[in-house]
Length: 70
Image 1 (cartoon, helix red, strand yellow):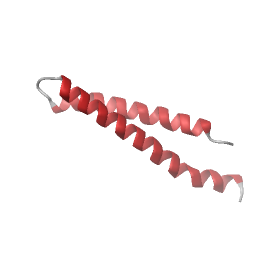
Image 2: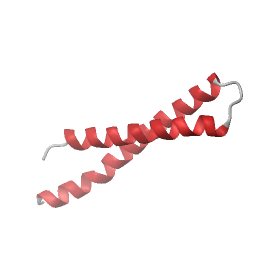
Image 3: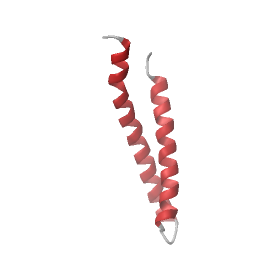
Image 4: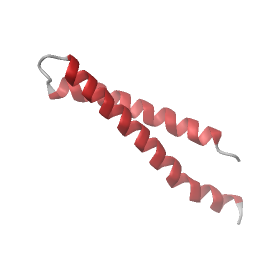
């Protein structure tokens, strides 16, 4: 196998792991914000969850790609 096909094969695995990390972070953030705010407004809960989830997704994807052997 050449280097290109090995890289293509590992990309979906990296994306799935990063998506899982981002989803877990978003869910935990949404639960924490919803529990800590008295009104439990969807916008108040959703915006921090999306920000944290997308940030964790980006950082996880970057770290997983960086740690992969060339």
